[in-house]
Length: 185
Image (cartoon, rainbow, N blue to C red; front, side, top):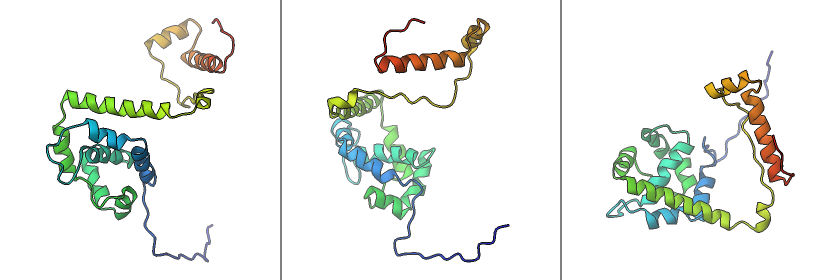
Protein backbone atom coordinates (compact mmCIF):
# COMPACT_ATOMS: atom_id res chain seq x y z
CA UNK A 1 0.00 0.00 0.00
CA UNK A 2 1.31 3.46 -0.94
CA UNK A 3 0.49 6.27 1.39
CA UNK A 4 2.58 9.27 0.46
CA UNK A 5 0.58 12.07 2.02
CA UNK A 6 3.32 14.65 2.63
CA UNK A 7 4.28 15.52 -0.97
CA UNK A 8 4.97 19.15 -1.83
CA UNK A 9 5.82 20.59 -5.25
CA UNK A 10 7.60 23.88 -5.73
CA UNK A 11 8.27 25.36 -9.15
CA UNK A 12 10.88 27.96 -9.84
CA UNK A 13 10.86 30.46 -12.66
CA UNK A 14 13.19 28.15 -14.61
CA UNK A 15 10.93 25.12 -14.86
CA UNK A 16 11.33 24.11 -18.48
CA UNK A 17 12.29 20.59 -19.34
CA UNK A 18 13.66 18.89 -22.40
CA UNK A 19 13.42 15.21 -23.25
CA UNK A 20 16.59 15.28 -25.35
CA UNK A 21 18.73 17.10 -22.80
CA UNK A 22 22.06 16.33 -24.47
CA UNK A 23 21.16 18.17 -27.64
CA UNK A 24 22.96 21.34 -26.52
CA UNK A 25 26.12 19.35 -25.78
CA UNK A 26 25.95 17.72 -29.21
CA UNK A 27 25.64 21.15 -30.81
CA UNK A 28 28.68 22.41 -28.90
CA UNK A 29 30.57 19.31 -30.03
CA UNK A 30 29.69 20.03 -33.66
CA UNK A 31 30.81 23.63 -33.26
CA UNK A 32 34.07 22.91 -31.39
CA UNK A 33 35.20 20.11 -33.69
CA UNK A 34 34.76 22.39 -36.69
CA UNK A 35 32.01 20.26 -38.24
CA UNK A 36 29.62 23.18 -38.68
CA UNK A 37 32.27 25.33 -40.37
CA UNK A 38 33.46 22.44 -42.56
CA UNK A 39 29.94 21.69 -43.80
CA UNK A 40 29.45 25.33 -44.71
CA UNK A 41 32.84 25.49 -46.42
CA UNK A 42 32.48 22.29 -48.47
CA UNK A 43 28.77 21.72 -49.16
CA UNK A 44 27.22 24.11 -51.67
CA UNK A 45 23.53 23.52 -52.32
CA UNK A 46 21.94 26.90 -51.67
CA UNK A 47 22.44 29.80 -54.06
CA UNK A 48 21.40 32.40 -51.48
CA UNK A 49 21.66 32.10 -47.71
CA UNK A 50 18.67 34.16 -46.65
CA UNK A 51 17.58 32.49 -43.45
CA UNK A 52 19.67 29.34 -43.25
CA UNK A 53 23.00 27.92 -44.34
CA UNK A 54 23.71 24.33 -45.41
CA UNK A 55 24.91 23.40 -41.93
CA UNK A 56 21.60 24.61 -40.44
CA UNK A 57 19.75 22.07 -42.54
CA UNK A 58 22.19 19.18 -42.09
CA UNK A 59 22.45 19.64 -38.34
CA UNK A 60 18.69 20.16 -37.96
CA UNK A 61 18.08 16.76 -39.55
CA UNK A 62 20.77 15.16 -37.38
CA UNK A 63 19.39 16.76 -34.21
CA UNK A 64 15.90 15.61 -35.15
CA UNK A 65 17.17 12.02 -35.14
CA UNK A 66 19.01 12.55 -31.83
CA UNK A 67 15.80 13.95 -30.35
CA UNK A 68 13.94 10.76 -31.28
CA UNK A 69 12.46 11.91 -34.57
CA UNK A 70 11.84 9.26 -37.20
CA UNK A 71 10.88 11.48 -40.14
CA UNK A 72 11.20 15.09 -41.24
CA UNK A 73 7.69 15.85 -39.97
CA UNK A 74 8.94 15.26 -36.41
CA UNK A 75 10.99 18.46 -36.73
CA UNK A 76 7.73 20.34 -36.22
CA UNK A 77 7.55 18.97 -32.68
CA UNK A 78 10.93 20.53 -31.86
CA UNK A 79 10.25 23.85 -33.61
CA UNK A 80 7.63 24.72 -31.02
CA UNK A 81 9.72 23.85 -27.94
CA UNK A 82 11.32 26.91 -26.44
CA UNK A 83 13.72 24.81 -24.34
CA UNK A 84 14.91 22.96 -27.47
CA UNK A 85 15.56 26.21 -29.33
CA UNK A 86 17.38 27.64 -26.30
CA UNK A 87 19.59 24.54 -26.06
CA UNK A 88 20.66 25.14 -29.66
CA UNK A 89 20.93 28.89 -29.22
CA UNK A 90 18.45 29.37 -32.06
CA UNK A 91 15.45 31.64 -32.51
CA UNK A 92 14.02 29.26 -35.10
CA UNK A 93 14.94 26.12 -37.03
CA UNK A 94 13.99 25.09 -40.57
CA UNK A 95 10.49 23.67 -41.03
CA UNK A 96 9.92 20.09 -42.22
CA UNK A 97 8.84 21.34 -45.66
CA UNK A 98 11.99 23.45 -45.94
CA UNK A 99 14.07 20.41 -45.00
CA UNK A 100 12.29 18.38 -47.66
CA UNK A 101 13.17 21.01 -50.26
CA UNK A 102 16.78 20.96 -49.06
CA UNK A 103 17.00 17.16 -49.28
CA UNK A 104 15.63 17.16 -52.82
CA UNK A 105 18.57 19.32 -53.93
CA UNK A 106 21.08 16.57 -53.10
CA UNK A 107 22.83 14.72 -55.88
CA UNK A 108 25.27 11.84 -55.43
CA UNK A 109 28.21 14.26 -55.53
CA UNK A 110 26.70 16.30 -52.68
CA UNK A 111 26.22 13.20 -50.53
CA UNK A 112 29.82 12.18 -51.17
CA UNK A 113 31.00 15.69 -50.30
CA UNK A 114 29.06 15.62 -47.03
CA UNK A 115 30.44 12.18 -46.13
CA UNK A 116 33.99 13.28 -46.96
CA UNK A 117 33.56 16.44 -44.89
CA UNK A 118 32.35 14.49 -41.85
CA UNK A 119 35.24 12.03 -42.23
CA UNK A 120 37.81 14.84 -42.51
CA UNK A 121 36.51 16.40 -39.30
CA UNK A 122 36.51 13.01 -37.57
CA UNK A 123 40.14 12.42 -38.57
CA UNK A 124 41.01 15.90 -37.34
CA UNK A 125 39.57 15.04 -33.94
CA UNK A 126 41.75 11.90 -33.80
CA UNK A 127 44.84 13.92 -34.81
CA UNK A 128 44.30 16.28 -31.86
CA UNK A 129 44.63 13.46 -29.35
CA UNK A 130 47.92 13.18 -27.43
CA UNK A 131 50.13 10.15 -28.12
CA UNK A 132 49.22 8.62 -24.73
CA UNK A 133 45.62 8.42 -25.86
CA UNK A 134 46.50 5.66 -28.33
CA UNK A 135 48.39 3.38 -25.92
CA UNK A 136 45.31 1.46 -24.81
CA UNK A 137 42.26 0.57 -26.82
CA UNK A 138 39.13 -0.80 -25.21
CA UNK A 139 36.58 -2.70 -27.23
CA UNK A 140 33.16 -2.79 -25.65
CA UNK A 141 31.07 -5.53 -27.25
CA UNK A 142 27.32 -5.34 -27.21
CA UNK A 143 25.52 -7.69 -24.88
CA UNK A 144 23.35 -8.92 -27.73
CA UNK A 145 24.62 -11.99 -29.53
CA UNK A 146 24.40 -12.28 -33.27
CA UNK A 147 21.65 -14.49 -34.57
CA UNK A 148 23.04 -17.65 -36.11
CA UNK A 149 23.17 -17.55 -39.88
CA UNK A 150 23.23 -20.57 -42.16
CA UNK A 151 27.05 -20.63 -42.03
CA UNK A 152 26.99 -20.39 -38.23
CA UNK A 153 24.53 -23.29 -38.04
CA UNK A 154 26.84 -25.26 -40.34
CA UNK A 155 29.79 -24.48 -38.02
CA UNK A 156 27.75 -25.56 -35.00
CA UNK A 157 27.24 -28.90 -36.71
CA UNK A 158 31.03 -29.24 -36.43
CA UNK A 159 31.01 -28.62 -32.70
CA UNK A 160 31.62 -24.85 -32.60
CA UNK A 161 28.70 -22.57 -31.86
CA UNK A 162 28.56 -19.02 -33.21
CA UNK A 163 28.59 -17.67 -29.63
CA UNK A 164 31.79 -19.52 -28.85
CA UNK A 165 33.49 -18.21 -31.98
CA UNK A 166 32.36 -14.62 -31.34
CA UNK A 167 33.53 -14.80 -27.73
CA UNK A 168 36.84 -16.39 -28.67
CA UNK A 169 37.50 -13.82 -31.40
CA UNK A 170 36.79 -11.00 -28.97
CA UNK A 171 39.23 -12.37 -26.41
CA UNK A 172 41.92 -12.84 -29.04
CA UNK A 173 41.39 -9.31 -30.31
CA UNK A 174 41.64 -7.96 -26.75
CA UNK A 175 44.86 -9.92 -26.12
CA UNK A 176 46.41 -8.58 -29.32
CA UNK A 177 45.52 -5.02 -28.30
CA UNK A 178 47.06 -5.54 -24.88
CA UNK A 179 50.26 -6.87 -26.44
CA UNK A 180 49.96 -10.56 -25.66
CA UNK A 181 52.05 -12.94 -27.76
CA UNK A 182 50.60 -14.25 -30.99
CA UNK A 183 48.02 -16.97 -30.44
CA UNK A 184 47.30 -19.72 -32.90
CA UNK A 185 43.79 -21.13 -32.85
